[in-house]
Length: 137
Image (cartoon, rainbow, N blue to C red; front, top):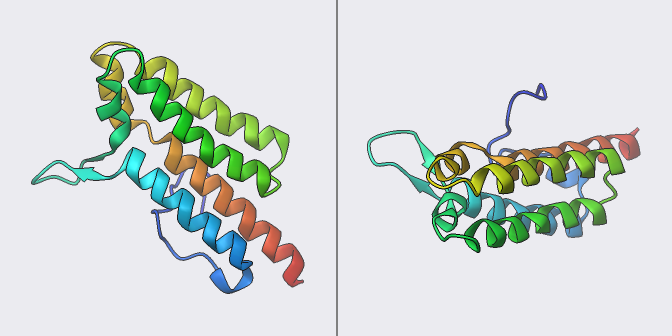
């Protein structure tokens, strides 16, 4: 999978190669990512959005709350041993989401299409796959 492609939440990962704690962590962050980025579908379309743009409608606090929840995924990445450069990339994605998402009206539309949490989950999953591949050799 290229870095431009996004793994669908729940797409198979070699679960047998992961520790039980890694599997549990992946389940938790996938739930958070799905809730923030893809929980709802516009009827009659394939367009999905999550709580992030919904919370963004609340002036001042909405984007802050969504960002704090997004930081949970980054914290799990830290616990999983992601390199500092990768954690900074993940933080940059959430920062862009927060800053641009705070712009009235336009920010809410941006939040609906900017899938920082999904990207961050994919980044963490890729790290875990590489890490388990190193141990399998």
